[in-house]
Length: 207
Ligand SMILES: Nc1nc2c(ncn2[C@@H]2O[C@H](COP(=O)(O)OP(=O)(O)O)[C@@H](O)[C@H]2O)c(=O)[nH]1
Ligand SMILES: [Mg+2]
Image (cartoon, rainbow, N blue to C red; front, side, top):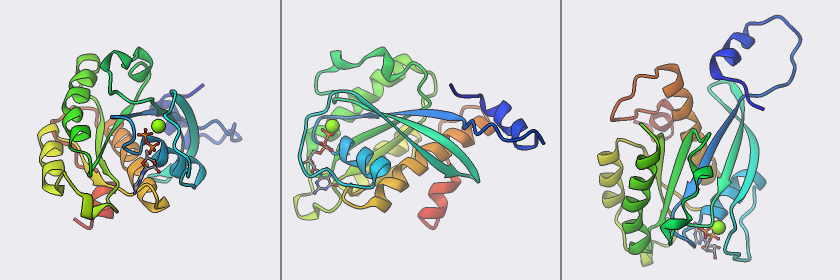
């Protein structure tokens, strides 16, 4: 059971002994199958890259992560993929704080699908918090979607854009760190804006 962010911030200054209750935030991995949703999730929660490909049934994972000096239990719902959009369940958006939309840079149809998935999210959530991820950045010689195309889409949505390689642990940490940072940033200043300027992303990208 999570506690709200305001209670948590108050608890930071509370002299009562720690109850070791961490605030929880939930994020959902969305995108076509085989783009690397599970690989990114596994790299983040278990520090390993899966060697066998299993088309995923929806699975939930958790990991405690420290962002902005705060320990948060991040719940990650790794979905089976939205190749068929009727597979867009209410559990994808009910109680969800952030959405990680993943395509593969070597698969143009997975990039095209991002628009449809985004619309589906927006149909159900007002001002959703999103990070757009172009995965498989190691497959440069097979690249079908340019970095500029990914960035342009993210600019249009007003969300951060990251190219990742799920084989690298650091890459997965950047993706999940970014979404959590934006979630917390928006909770601190809840006025919705079209753009998102994550200080975490500015820091990691040196901007
Ligand atoms: N080269 C490369 N392969 C990846 C990467 N991420 C995932 N894969 C491979 O892509 C396939 C699908 O990955 P998976 O995570 O299961 O995709 P999902 O269906 O979106 O969950 C698997 O064979 C993975 O090993 C990546 O960053 N680089
Ligand atoms: Mg999967």
